[in-house]
Amino acid sequence: MQLGLGGLKRVGIYIVGTVALYFLVTAAVREFAYGSLAAVVWHWKHGDKVQVEGYEITVPKRWFSSDTGQYSKEIDRVNFVSVVLISNSSRPSAHLDQWKATTESLIRDKDKVEPESREMPLGSHNRIICIQGKYIRNRVSIDCRSDAKLGLLFIGRAIDVQEFYGIVANIRVLP
Image (cartoon, rainbow, N blue to C red; front, side, top):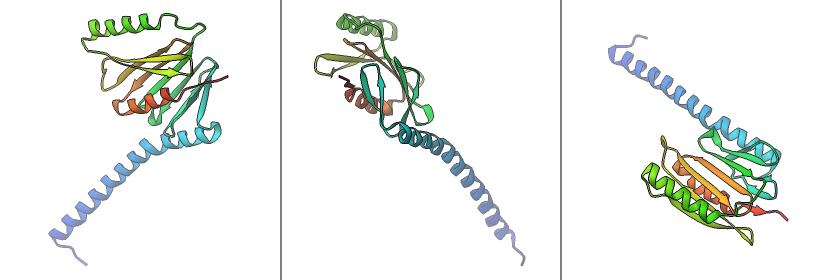
């Protein structure tokens, strides 16, 4: 069977399209499946929560935790596009309002942007304040401190900010 010039063109387009589709699918599998698999395996082994000295933090399904010790944890978004660092200092932040005012002032002066802050309850007697600063290379930075001993730092994509605030809102103080 002989193909004319038009037939050869169609076969060439088909081959190029098939190869391009193969590379797109392979890249998508590499990008999403391995990270998703790591999160699934982590949740299967550890459940949905991590503990940091006196606190329990719920880890969303597409996130997983790196065990960095009793006093700190790292929670990573699938494919490491966003990360939350959680630490428990040896002493509470006695001057939380002063920290908030100083941090907001530094962001205004240095970064020339108006910082966004949120305050949430932490247990029945404490609170946590989060301050979002400047975007750096398409990443958001949010620093959170509590008047207890807990601190969080989020660095990640803007699309993950609401999920981060969900993590913060669901922190439970252990008895």
